[in-house]
Image (cartoon, rainbow, N blue to C red; front, side):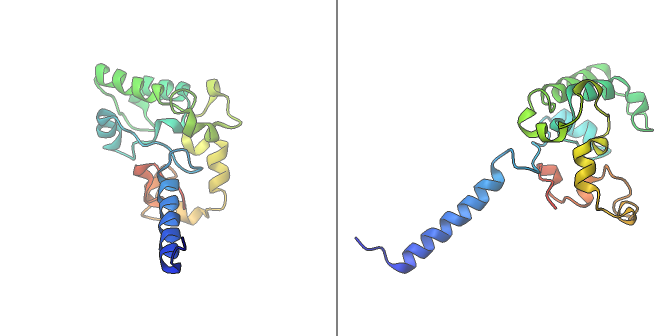
Length: 163
């Protein structure tokens, strides 16, 4: 049976499109970090900044960060102890070296999980990926801080950090 050229072309086009869509949707791409799925974490953390994917830091970093919310990068982000415990549990369970390993292993290369920084922007992989960004871009009024991922990565809330 001979398949008409037009039908074959349309079939190949559909296949290519599907591969593109599925490839992006498939978790674990080189710049994908599963976004926060917990409503409490989204609400509490996301009210001040992007609720960072838990797989971007190891469990030890999340524990240290949540243990000192009174001094959260220059702000008092204190929470009710029950809420803080719930957020800590979620972030630790999905951290780069626990449940989020599939996504976060790439960021932790060369980092001791027991002595990891609290800032994602201090991880060697992050520094390497952003080394060519000029200083003036970090100071731009729409960026202002290296932690403002969504200023340049428009799909950051959905977990995609590609350029």
